[in-house]
Amino acid sequence: MDKEYEETGKIPLIGSAFPKMVVQTSHGMKKLPMDYQGKWFVLFSHPADFTPVCTTEFVSFSRHYDDFQALNTELIGLSMDQVFSHIKWVDWIKENIGDEIKFPIIADHGECARKLGMLHAKATNTVRAVFIVDPKGKIRAILYYPAEIGRNMDEILRMMKAFQVATKHDVAIPANWPNNELFGDHVIVPPATDVKTAKERLESKDHECLDWWMCHKKLD
Ligand code: BEZ
Image (cartoon, rainbow, N blue to C red; front, top):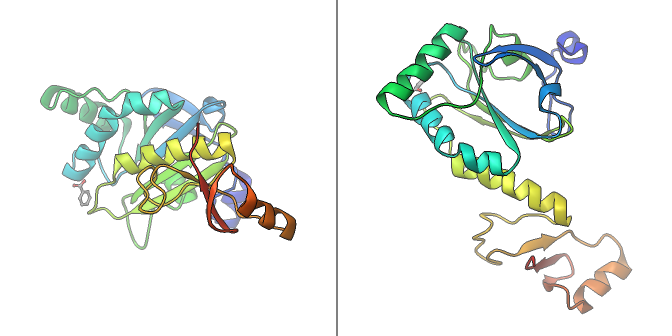
């Protein structure tokens, strides 16, 4: 485990390197983030195996698995259940619902959960956390949901698409993209930070602007 987090008790934030750790999963031992170098990964925790909301989430992740793969993104689950429980639960989902869970699930004893701030106020089970980590092992987004509310996989997928578009085209992504109320599927041109660029923004034919600091464009 990374010394920085072990010694200070700090939780990694957006922009930090994902803490190095060796974890036991239903697909064997994995080294994070090294084993996923060159790929994005979504690490998500759930409160417990064999619980209804968590089961709906796993089925939903499973049905979006190919969409994540198409975005060079691996999924990794985590809870503080034993690996035997993960194996039995995955079997139960296959036998009773028919969905195959193709991604590994970490069997954590609390070490990983504590490092990632997944155990909230007096909780003995992990909350529904999502860490999105880029191909260089940097944390790019963190979401926390309470036990009683299942996550929206479409939003997690939208974030994966948005990251890849934003990085490739050096743009920002508006609310509800690609169905934004003001700009539809257009993306945001990062605001000008000097007078000359601000003036050019309003004159350029490459994009449309409401003002020099609010310009948007359609991607080809
Ligand atoms: C569930 O997955 O159904 C659940 C788990 C923990 C608390 C509440 C609901």
